[in-house]
Length: 92
Ligand SMILES: O=C(O)CC1=CCC(=O)O1
Image (tube, rainbow, N blue to C red):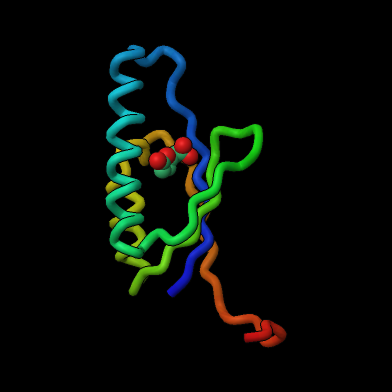
């Protein structure tokens, strides 16, 4: 099952810079781990925004929720999920 996911990140401005740096580093490590599993085939920065557009390839809604909520930045994200289906006009 493919899902288009947009994540908008809003880390509180008052957060200790060391805590912020650690959060971002652990987010990167976890994101790379999930990508290596093949469940997160696309990850793109939205130009000019602290946001990304991703494609996830998972077996269920519950699996996707588990992956997203395992991200250290999850508490600071607004996440919008769009389930994808095949388009009848797609060639190939
Ligand atoms: O920077 C972002 O868009 C948030 C994020 C998701 C995975 C990652 O490494 O950072």
